Amino acid sequence: MAEQCPQCVAWLRARLGRAAADLGARPIPRPERLLQGEQGRLGPWISVAAAAQRRPGGDGVAPACDRPLWVAPGLLGGSGAPDGRDADLARLAESAGRLAELAAADGAAAQFLGEQGAPMDAGAPRRHQAYWLQLLAEARAAIERGESDTQAPPVWPGLATDWAAHPWHALNWQRAWRQVEPEVLQR
Image 1 (spheres, rainbow, N blue to C red):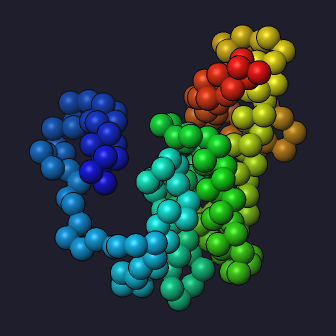
Image 2: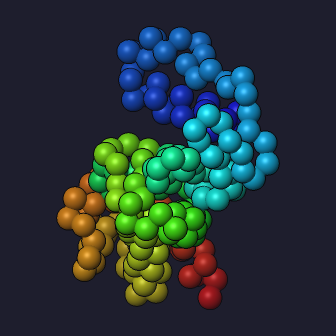
């Protein structure tokens, strides 16, 4: 929280403009009770820290104890294309796959709450994983073909129409390009 919250507050202040004055000096109170270790329990929640992350030391996931509801802020999103801002996209893909593995025992009953949007079904982690992997593959292929990084983001078979049209898809495309470009050019 000490590293991530100030950045999120800065984004929130930028989005709110003059209305950000309502946030006050400390808009995100630090929790009084912290979980320690790889796994812990807080009320009805089990914390699975480091199970899935956007970046090293980043967001975790938490399944509810009495029902298969997984909370994965920063990893999944239920309101259009996923948000890859400030994230390592390969790590997002890996983490979404790890989340799918963790929730596999819950089967089709598993539901996921992401950063924003409605609850998602059991297939959400794998859809997010597939998106990140395909986006990175598309960027690698475009760079290898010598295309420009200013081209429109790719649309591939199976990509949800609302994801393809979402502004985050274009931002994710730029991020994917920047992350794979050094790797491709070094070969």
